[in-house]
Length: 180
Image (tube, rainbow, N blue to C red; front, side, top):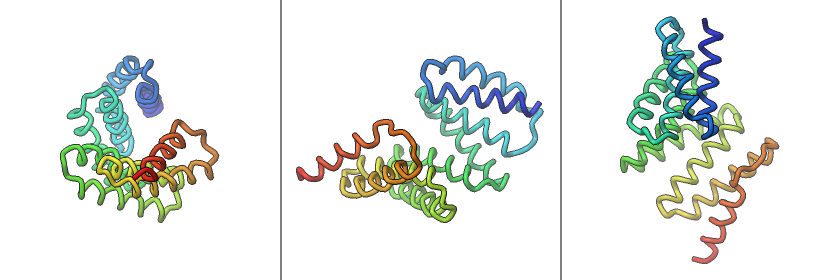
């Protein structure tokens, strides 16, 4: 039962990462939802809601996304998985920012950064610094954006991960502040 549930959640996640699988992702999510009542571990249930939230977010269903991510965050905390708790909180920071609560958003991202620094989780430090940079950029704080994106790019290089436009965006932001 658990293996089938996790496989369905994983397959639904492909809809988040690849637009061509989005519709199929929602179908897998519905199948997993049918098994949800038989799964009692909060961490597993949190994975479902986290995946659902991410999928709804990229599909533009923002109120559903926020609701799912709030459930995931709470369940990850209950299950004792601080890493995934902070990951879901970072996803939620998007909604906090969009609602105009910028200081609260920056506080969430800064707390996540400190957590991931404490665990030396370089992959999530990359994600955190990138998100902090995005928030600074939207606020017109381009120097802070570049500072965080430089750290993010350095972490991604250190991890040996392929770039997906981050280097180009960093260079554009660097040009922007050099022209000011």
